[in-house]
Image (cartoon, rainbow, N blue to C red; front, side, top):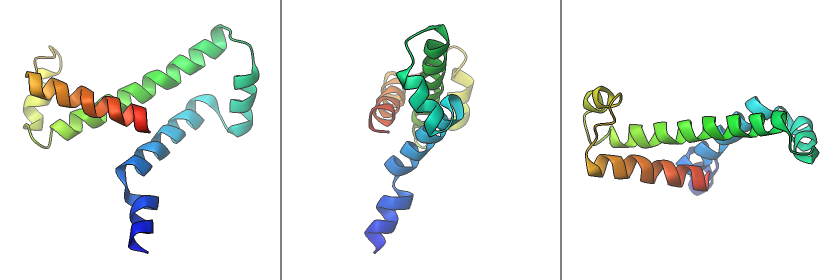
Length: 106
């Protein structure tokens, strides 16, 4: 029972997947609109919609990596270093590692 609660509602992968689905629905529309878009030939409008969706997903994933590192490095220091991307090697690695796997698995 408790494992079902964890895997179905509280697991980070489940939550990230639901957020990605919400982004997809927000950008591409409901199921019928997404199916129609997928069947349409590639054009500028379809490319713009697909790239917008992916860009929002990547930004979300980078944000999750940033907040993960914020647990271990003072978040104020991370925010201050953001405009120049002046992070240490481990901070950079973990931001992109966590973001990459969030994107890949969700």
